[in-house]
Length: 161
Image (cartoon, rainbow, N blue to C red; front, side, top):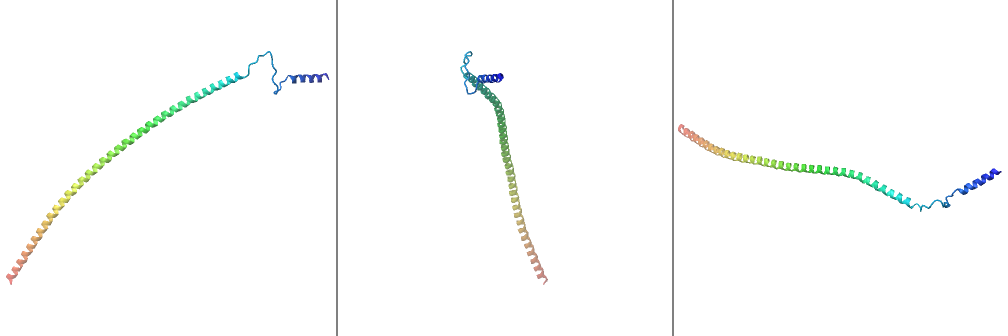
């Protein structure tokens, strides 16, 4: 029986030594009070701030590399665009120059054709007039010859009669 009582007392003593969560911790006069957890929280906040600063700094450093690469690509793109626009302007100028040259050549050929047409027209008109005069002259000569032949035939008929 003694063992039951001993067990019961030991258990009660151990229960009384345990701190329950709802009770305040026993004060120990041998240890001085630390003054709370304020310093711990301050150190934790400082460490978090430093960590955040370092994280942002590394993110901006990486971002800077990407931005620099983007700016380089942008500059290359702008330069290529400018060169393309210059080439387009050169082609437009060459096109306009070629168009003007072709127009000048065509106008020159048209003027030459008009001159040849006018020469041919004048030549044809002269030939037509010459042929017309020759035809009129021939007609008059034929009429005269026919008239003379008719007269001769009339006289020869008169002489025979």
